[in-house]
Picture (tube, rainbow, N blue to C red):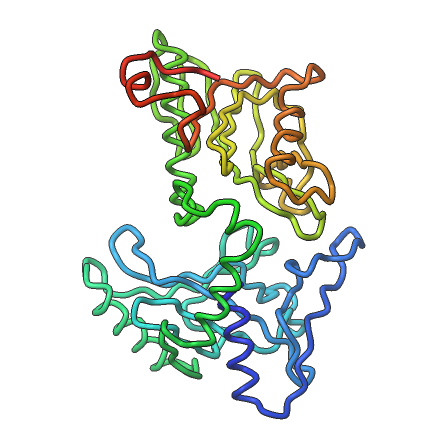
Length: 349
């Protein structure tokens, strides 16, 4: 969101006098109004539909690269593109690089998901090169040597960028998670950490059962297949409510168990889900990724603590078979001392 605001302001500087407007979100496939975040492009520049994609320079297995996801190029109807101008923002330790993409370099499909979520654009450095700086030079050479156009390079100390970041830090989510563990991690890194937490809880709860890894999202406990999903308590601006949403839970069999990790400012809650409570369809991706699990707090309630109580109340209600397995607090609970914590058995809540 910071990079979108920043690049849009740079686009305005590059096109003085142009008429800039917010995107027309349009309609979903079911005819309902899209949310602002689901629009097929980000803004209009003199009637030109501009789409921005951003990526952080990151390490992927054996090389540094930038990856831009969900680029909807409309392979089925090339004459009816979803946007007219594709801008890329590369977030790197050296600065932010802004490009106009040629819709060719690094474009790859995503199998059956391409028509639903779009394509990827991946530009990689040389394999086996550990230096991010050397890899970035190669990535920039690929971009500059293609049909892409470099529009600018901006320092991470840019005053406008610092102002946008400062405003973002004062947001509802940032204030709620300030100084909390895992708050500064990427979603994938946090998900891996929470996966390990849930697996540890499951091992402690079932010491006599043999555990073996089955997939990135689960394991086998004896003959039972266990799946784990994690979600952060987040503020949904369109619904004006706090909620937890576990995406793409897949399709379960009678032997499956679904364990959920709720990452909240208070701590991590681990639940065994009953495979029924809060399940909702996820539009066109339901057929390939499965439904979601969404549990929402009170509408228009901005206090995350009040909302969390309401959400936990839904999980703990007698109307479902969900079961709380553990709570891992981020701060020492009232009444505990360091001596007590050192000598006492772990408290389960």
